[in-house]
Image (cartoon, rainbow, N blue to C red; front, side, top):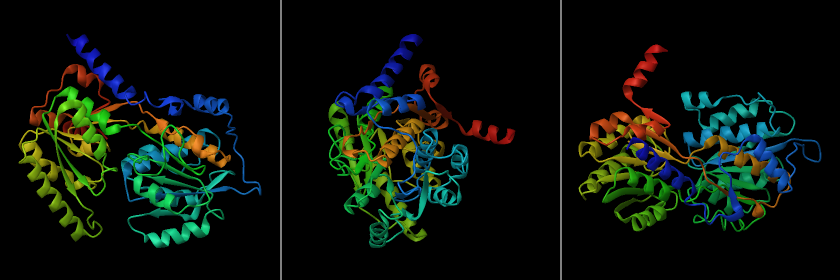
Length: 414
């Protein structure tokens, strides 16, 4: 029986990995590319990845735009840099931070960017002093003015993280390449025209992770079927995966209870307090609807410190809370994350596109789809508290089993 249970779980993981790939055609990236495979693939499709300077001998200058502080963006940015390092575009050993430092110290992208400005990354690329923006904190007209003035002068390529940044930069119609990563659905949001049939512009490309919420909810349902799933969407249906969540309810056969919170001011401490009071009231309302599971999408709760208080009403009713993104939320009290966040290889995939863009590639023709290997994180303490069944077979295939006792023990040993 145990072997059979393990086989079933592994089968579900394989379905998670491949179920969205059937329509990908030649535009689907391979999962888990090694450095050698990436380079070989680049040679096969006719692109030379050999590092070089601009024709005048100067370095290519890169820019970066994000919406606000978000640790998954920091991690992926790091692995994009590592991908550039592996391909020789950044001098080995010159990246001024490590993956462990980013995780342990919560280093945001703006802090990484500042360090990169002072680092000697070698002779081929550097980061523009006019090239970093947090969209949430900078007037968009000012961003537009700076990017319009500097694109093609001291900014040769811009990386955008997420949907908002990608949509905004695309709207500027700049004369330099835009490469977007980590958008929930770059096609539905209009960043690119198609994931598999051309992006719609020789200067625009986006990394696509196919139907992530749909694959996640299939897996969560396979572990413990739910009849009535609740979710709360903040501001943007596309960013939060709303269409995929609705498609999941139809395909799998559960009832969906979906609440919507329109855009709120979330900058000052007073505004944040008011916003999270609103979220808590919506949580209590949706629990009163009789849900037996909750799916936490991106951007609803960005403050990890507030998360335990906001989750408490669910756990008082033994309602499991499943996650769409960010493993840090599992540490803070979310029950489980089945993640498509193969960050190291996604970083390589994006870096490969960056190098091709710097070599003058038509981005309209590059593959966009990358289907990540699945990763499972579970909060064991929460599972025990709400009586959630965790079989030995399931625990054996988890990538991370978080318990407060283990964390405290590890801290004492250090």
